[in-house]
Amino acid sequence: MGVFTPERRRQAPPPEPPQYEPPREPRRGIPWGLVGLGIVIVLLVFGVSWVRGIFPDFDNPFRQQTIDRSGPAVLKSLQDLHSYHAATGNFQQIVDLHQDSGLPDAILGSRTLYVAYGSVDATVDFSNVDDDSVDVSDNRLTATITLPRPTLSPARIDPTRSYVYDQDEGALNKIGDIFSSNDHDQQQLNVLAVQKINAAAQQGSGLIARARENTRLMLSSLLRALGFTTVNVVFEDETG
Image (cartoon, rainbow, N blue to C red):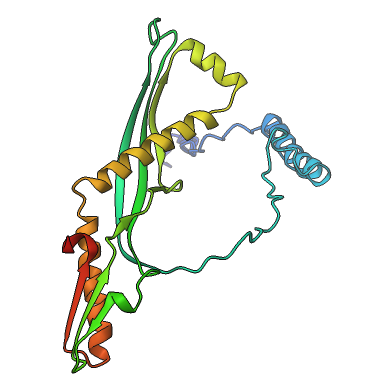
C-alpha cells in the first residue's frame, strides 16, 4: 500500500528589500534675474566707454585743467657781484595774527597761525677793498687785510615750505572771502614774517660772528697758497 505524503503548499519567495535611491535635487530654473543684471552691467560698461570716446571729459564735467601760458623770463639788467657770502641762517617763524573788532570773533574777526621758513645771508663787501686795505710785509710773508663789517641781507621767505597752519574766521569774514581773494592777507603774513626773521637775525643769531670767522678762513687759505705764512684779517668795526 503506497504512502501518501501530504502535498506541500507552494510558498511565494520573500519580497526583495526596496533599493535606496538618493533624493533627486529639484531642477533649478535659469536665474533670469542675474542674467539680466549681468547684461545691464555689460551695457553700462560699453556705454560709458563709448560716451568717453566721444566726450573725453564726461567722467567729470566740472574738472578744471591748469594751463601755463606764461612767457619766458625777460632779463632786465646785469650786475657784478663783489661780495662774499660768508654765512646763511635758516629760520622758522610762527606768525600769530589776530584781527579783532568790537564784535565777538564768531561774528567778525579772524586768527591765523602761519608757519614761515626764511633765510638771511651774511656777506662781506669786497668792492671797496683796494691797495690801502692790504698791508704786505717787506719779506712778503705776512699780509694784513682790512675789510668792512659783515652785513645781513633782508630775509627771504621760502613759499614752497611756508604754510597756514590754522585759521579761524567769523561768519562775516567767511562771507567776505567769497567776494575777495586772500592775496592781501598772505602778503601781510609774509611782511610780518620777514620783519620778525630780520629782528631774530640781528639779535643773538651769531651770523655776523660766523661771517667773520668764515671770511678769515677763506682768505687765510687763499693767501697761504700764495706763499704767505701769516694772514691777518681785520674788520673796520674792530679797529675803532
